[in-house]
Amino acid sequence: MNFEETYLNDNILDALYDMHFEEMTPVQEKCIPEILDGYDLIGVAQTGTGKTAAYLLPILSMLDDGGFPKDAVNCIVMAPTRELAQQIDQAMQGFGYYLDGISSVAVYGGNDGSRFDQEMRGLKMGADVIIATPGRLLSHIRMGHVDLSRLSFFVLDEADRMLDMGFSDDILQIAKLLPKNHQTIMFSATMPDKIQQLARTLLYNPVEVKIAVSKPAEKIQQSAYLCYEPQKLGIIRHLFKAGELKRVIIFSGKKDKVKDITRELQRMHINCAQMHSDLTQQERDDVMYRFKAGQVDVLVATDIVARGIDIDDILMVINYDVPHDAEDYVHRIGRTARAQRDGVAITFVSDSDMRYFSDIERFLEKDITKNPLPQELGDGPAYQISAPRKSTRGRGGKKKGGKRYHGHGYHSKKKGNKKQNPPV
Image (tube, rainbow, N blue to C red; front, side, top):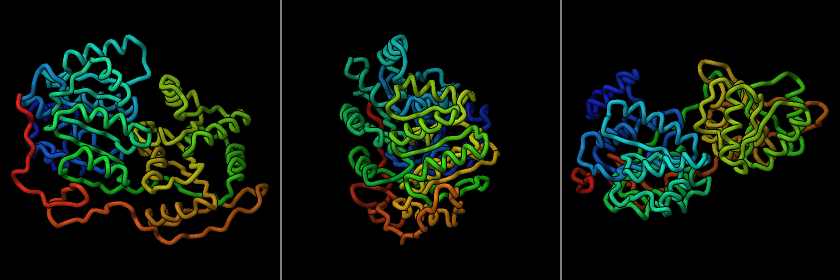
């Protein structure tokens, strides 16, 4: 479907033409008309599907068409990290190139006082769109810098990551300050119970759009080592002694393991850096800058960088432990084999993680190659394939017709249920 087939306004279409955007992605095709019609929406889509445009384009189009207060904050876009907030802000500048009357401000932590003052001035002037991380926005709210009483659009991007990072209470505090009659849009890469609960709390009779998780690129050479936990550092030593590896990300689900891996690599004189939640935002920014610039060869990280970071030249991804969700596995290894390059993904599968790994193979519909352990490490565990586990997702029943999630079930979409923008 072409963007011109929607009723996005001409200023938005002109910007898309300049940016060579013509065909909509599936998530844009399903979301843009529903958002333009005023419905709350929950979208389940991974990074790289075009979801930022799926919510920004219709919101900017409606704001540009008018009917919203000029001296108020009309839209908040919440993002879990500074990096994602910056990416959304960049997209906002491109999509809003011809929107002279629409102002925006990006609000995020990890910067100096002058930046905070700049944010404060933008908020007090009533920026149309605020792109913010939860903690930083709450700081401005508590200091009286922003009034959300006339807000029309509330967007939560990568909601699952925000909950994983402990922002649930912050989000609910902000939501309590919003007027009753506003439109809420939520995007999440996964749909666990906690996201369904948040949706029931914040959204009114929303449309649900789910885009299937794409399989990893065929250019990724996937393999695994079956091992016991104490053997993992030995495999790391083996891999890095076998060749001079650069542009590598090693993922672990726990920051303590990230620190252990980093110490082992440093003992081997590997040029590496670590990324986890104990670092300040400024420290994270410095690590990412040095890794992107090629000043660091190996990045050891928790899942904080598994999504939303655009680095096109990663040659290898190592999963030090097995993600407990197949979608998280796809996100992790999707950091490699980008921009038409080849890539390698290696996963360490301990005896306690085999059931999760067999779930991943079942999802991928393929057997991943099992590498023999280095001789000096001895034998590893035998691979045991688990029985399929029952999914905990989508417990609400589905009815034929337009899917609409409300409470614990789905209801047919009815005409005349359109939410109206608050009166000016």
